[in-house]
Image (cartoon, rainbow, N blue to C red):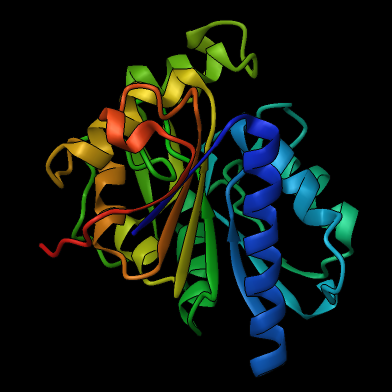
Length: 260
């Protein structure tokens, strides 16, 4: 796994967007299309803005999926990840082939099966992730299930995850945050050919340290990214501030790829 540390969120976002755009262009050149998974959250806004401005991408040749969505939250709510995906990526690029997780549907399990079948039909070329303040990837809160094979699963959200959503101002109080969500499973995330995680800001520093320096464990869900053969984690100096001193310097760092 490769760790890249930048001085600030802006430089991090632009560098990550350059790598993402290059991977997309490479996939389109090699196979005529690119299949991508997109994270939508406050930490991803600058990255997605830079990505949508990248040149040389034929967005009509992209098939897009998103990581997760709250159950019971309408698409009109500002915290809806469907709404964010539409505003931050789809409407700005003209992507026509995309799959929304309708968490407001009467049967969320049926949504998980339907979108999961589409996702599993072919390999994902690149998955864009964030890491939560509790170390989650997608909505796989600790202890995350590292073994479930279904592409999308229904999960319970822990209090730390729900508090984060209040802290990001999507909800005014925790009672408004849904208690369940549709989430891409950990095993499905790891099936992507390439993973790119954008993780800025000091509020992520404790989770970054636990997931990169601690044991690979369901208690630290993002630690599983260390087992992926082509994963890159983008940090700024704030999110990297609790790492060992030798890892805090700006630049590239190779981390040991472990197996479990």
